[in-house]
Image (cartoon, rainbow, N blue to C red):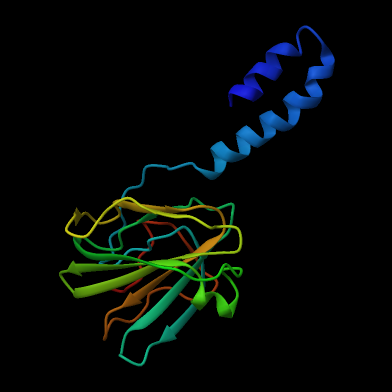
Length: 189
């Protein structure tokens, strides 16, 4: 931002500074857009989407849970939110690769696995880094109390967040549906 402002001011003295000011101003605008963090009013469902994006897949898991995978493009807000109120029981960083988050092999990517103790029992969600997203920034640690739709972390650039709905809870979203973090309900409750 400082470089964009300085080169923009220098264009008043010499128009050639515009060659530097234009890309720096565009880059600054892009970064401000990417790292935006709008306020949200929590949705009414019991389990809320932790991410802005598009539902990539809905898969039954062998233990009876249902995984809802939400792909976040570089154009989405990348601040993630708590799907439910509860207590953070664990935040585990798992090293891995960096294939595109929409790729089937992204299940082996670097990730942060969250567990919340909620009114429905243990709720797991996973922040997954993508090809460009190489940094996941958790805002909370184990033991923290979290409210519904409270900010829990950030994944930089394109990535994915998986939520594991507890056994017996049917998803209220479908593949291809857009989600809004902290607003879109993932269950019918």
